[in-house]
Amino acid sequence: MRRALLIVLDSFGIGGAEDAAAFGDEGADTLGHIVEACLAGAADRPGLRAGPLRIPFLESLGLALAAEASTGRAPAGLAIPATACGAYGYGVEVSSGKDTPSGHWEIAGAPLDVPWGYFPDTVPAFPEPLTRAIIEQSGLPGVLGNCRAAGVDLVKALGEEHVRTGKPIIYTSADSVLQIAAHVDTFGLGRLYDLCSLTRTLVDPLRVGRVIARPFTGARAGEFRRTPDRKDFAMPPPRGNLLDRAGEAGRAIVSIGKIGDIFGHRNTGVEIKGDRHPDLFAKMLRALATLPDGGLIFANFLDLDTDFGHRRDVAGAAACVEDFDQRLAGLASFLAPGDLAIVTGDHGNDPTWRGTDHTREHAPILAFGPDVPRGAIGRRDTFADMGATMAAHLGLAPTLKGRPFW
Image (cartoon, rainbow, N blue to C red; front, side, top):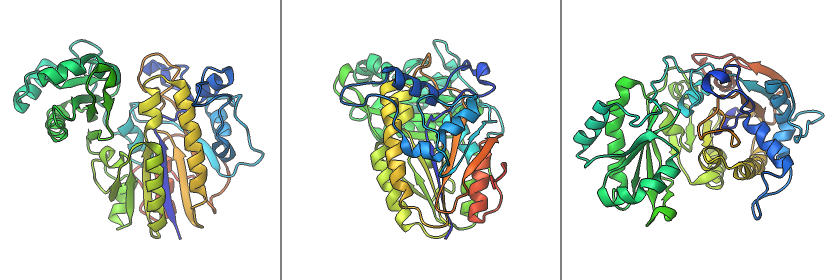
């Protein structure tokens, strides 16, 4: 039996990449700074968590050793196992971004081949012809925002005006993205999706990575809350990734979380969405229970990024990683001989860092399973080595880029 699980803890970086300064992120370290904050008591929150970061399963896989290889120093608050119970190392992103699509595409073995287009940190942020086309072609009375901002804060500031006027809130970030927020009840979820689909076609010539629908509910500013119905409208990924190889071979594929959106629903098999980590983990375990020989599960777990990283909530981020660790340990008991699981991140999102954007970092690579070789796999010069390893494990054609670990 040979099955594979590729698990991405969104934004789980382990130290700044060599080119981090070019992204304004020199010194960022998502894991390291969470560990330091926990040791200093800065990540204590009554009723949530307290004390040092407790992630015994990730420690047993060699996370501290991977972080030491990445940064040159092991995080002082993490245990180093005498013998790791998995393979450990770190990946260096070669794609020219620090966003979700480029990270995931490269993880799957097909890095971004052409640079993204970005919107400036100005007001307005979007070119006037684009804004005019969005308004005219969708019959809108206008738009709100038109700036670079944290979405939660912008909805709090402009949500009531949006409900009153019917003008959706559009904004961007340091990523190649155009996001549209609208109220589910007054604007409509289907209408929001239609607007995002139209906008996707309008930004294609600009090579914008994603258009994201951000639905929310609530009666007033202090009560607005995002719903789980976020939807990403992404540029199609490069050909030759792990999902393509599995699809071409007729293998069973299960996509958990937003994987289907990230890969443009191409060779993404059965797509399963859910609300936050507990729900998604439960659904992943149910999928694993019926996954046939040669099958692939590709999962994204988003909470660390959206709920805590972008909001610069270090206590929430620490609690999230601790919860992920417990659930990952539970997953290990469901793996059968021949199964390979790889846990990684797609970029960083240091909750102690300035601003609210992703951070350019190395990603951990932690591989485990009953028959997986143990020990160091060292520095991997591209995230694509993960996809290449998965393809080799499943007996698939090689991915576009990458070298297997073993």
